[in-house]
Image 1: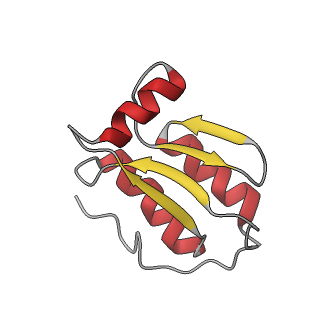
Image 2: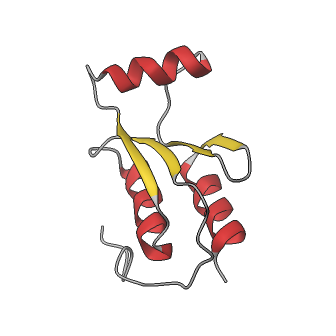
Length: 97
């Protein structure tokens, strides 16, 4: 079901010095929530597409010992986290003005 206005709003944000790394894949509704928040805040990010068979999926597994998406690494704060709702809340609290 569509979420009214999701992904089409703009919220002023403080720009991070370095882009946020995001492991995500297109088919995941949870990843979509994080992508929408990144777009809403216009935050620079590096998307590591990690669909089935992607070497980026194995890269995340090797790094964290498991695969779960979405996953972000924010080099500006040292935060690394899973869980779409926690990520969206973190981005809002950290960067929204």
